[in-house]
Length: 457
Image (tube, one colour):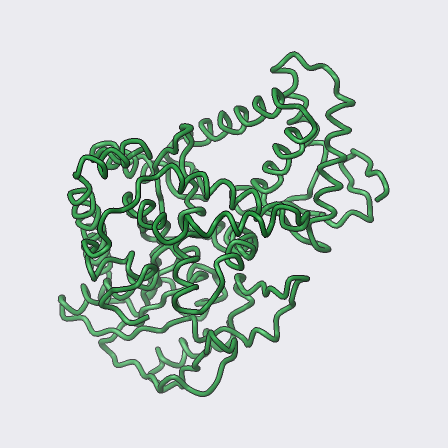
């Protein structure tokens, strides 16, 4: 590969032109920022060779050029993971450690900004702090404290209190939307993959029924385009995580028709065949009914642009873990959701665990680009995580990760999957196993992923 110039304008042959920041914004990719970050980290350990930083940047760019397809748009965390990998593999362990500490420091700075600003995927700091405080109060804010609760036999209380807190959020949301019931015709449950949208939608529906409100559920999963209409990468994997994977025109058209009192034919999507076939049911909306929508991209403007703002209530759910691992770092929300999806997709869609891990970069990139920018438009942000569930996922998945890691270890195009798999495997190894799956309530939204629940998905 031809050496790349380290100037603000990327060499025309380089595949990467843009990068997705933490707030979801796409900006021009500037390799000099990588050099600056490496050099700053080196200075912290008395390094003074900027040429060495530029040399390492070229290695990182070469690796990116090898990994990513043409015009891919990586997210900033992926690039930073590659920086750590190259530093360590080239013997710069002290600089790598300084860079890791720099990342952690920048994260702390972001998390201590004023509450009017958003942090961690645009979720308000006030909510993040509230969740962490709850975990501290219940002695499950770290892997160490959670393990202690399990080993000491106090885990049942954690399960019951966690489920109670989740139900409390459901009630608060119901009270909030009932204040707008006069004009409300559409209730949107949005959020990233495996955040708990489907069960939460069902529970909100139950709460509405208790208040005498009639509702109908419109499941966006049935509006997927046939998978054969989407591009396939070299692994035969489809990128169906973006809003363009949905038939947005049909959704908008049918929503508008429903609110006009017309009957519509809801399509049926078969996940095992990857095709839309026939009709699921005919649907019409009565005057006193509310439409409930469960969708990754519920906040995306194009999805419901035909519906007046006052007729919509936007609800956003994320698995806000707020638990520190054994090294003092917060467990990544996206890692928890990936574990959920691995189990669910294997049980419900016959999807191999390794494929979910290999596909996850599509999921995360789509979240950053198509979901995160719209979180601020939500009327409510809801926490869909349960502090005890990591030890549950250990039971299902820990034994699978050595094979997954081996699969990606020597594939340069799957470095991101390899790094992610190693990190999550280390997390699972640090956990005590959950003692009794039968104790998890049958109506828990965790059952959406591990099975054995009262709801049909």
